[in-house]
Image (cartoon, rainbow, N blue to C red; front, side, top):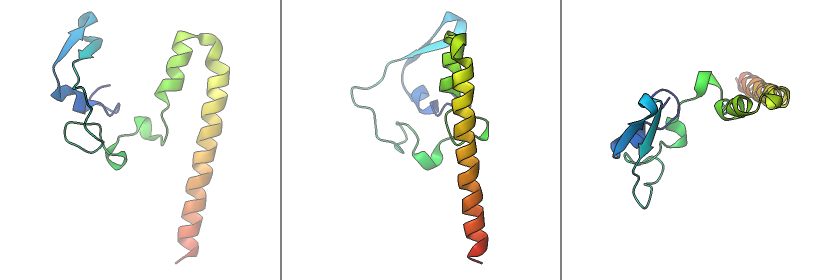
Length: 101
């Protein structure tokens, strides 16, 4: 996840140790984190990767369900509402683009 789509590959520039058989990492970060877009800092928004192509963070809400399965229905309802909003926004952008031709 660090290298895939968690937007955390920049952390690998800093001293780190694998824990729990490599399932977790501990990083020694500088006192001041470099700004977004800096080679030693987090990526700028336009350089970030999306998890499974989503324009939102779907992992964090799902992790809540792993910790508390009773949150599953509310979490899925929220994710679906956000996904529908995202789809409506994309559709409106496409229609506006085609109308401007």
